[in-house]
Image (cartoon, rainbow, N blue to C red; front, side, top):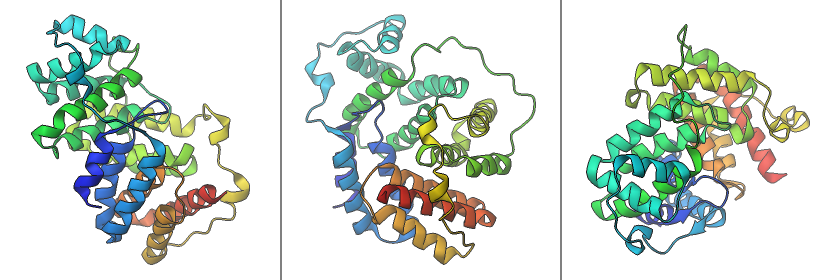
Length: 298
């Protein structure tokens, strides 16, 4: 197993439940390798998790659909309404005409205006923007298929919302504290914070502040799904240590002890990133890793 093989697997993997996570997990794998120094073992584990979480695809759908040069207005309507298979051609034509940067800027503006539970509209989009830079020209068409499936399942109905009015800047450390108090389902609040901070230079100031504001609201508000609340019995069993060696051992347990969910990888990456940014929070971050490891084994 190599990084190239894992990328190919992720590119040809589509979602079963709502949004595709394989490409974000691939990128998290690359980041995790810098922390864990165990690339072969990690690649095999991520490949196993992708295989059990996704629907395998064997072709580039754009090649199977009649080519039509839609107008800009028609193109956006097709994607907004998720009209298939026309959406594949609409996205391909948009990319040929305007380039990926134009597509990303359109959707990142929308992502910053709209707070979505679990924030996949933010994290997957930011990850796809990073993935695009790694692709060979031959891989771009199949990538656009996955991008099309993501945006048509995610950005629906909020296109004409106005920009938010933000009164004061959001402090990353305060938001981290809120996210540690309420990590959300499989630590999604922490995953979101890591991706927003990591990709800060890809965002305008107002987009960055808006994403942090939306995340903070989610972290301090009651969860939409009560099943995502922390299990207090398991949480109280989790230990805290501020030693980096203990933190790393707990991350390895999260990644390798079970094979349950791709979020084992994306959460482990986020926790490592945040520990590097905020070493004073090592113990609390380790506790989250311990908790999710226990939940996977439950």
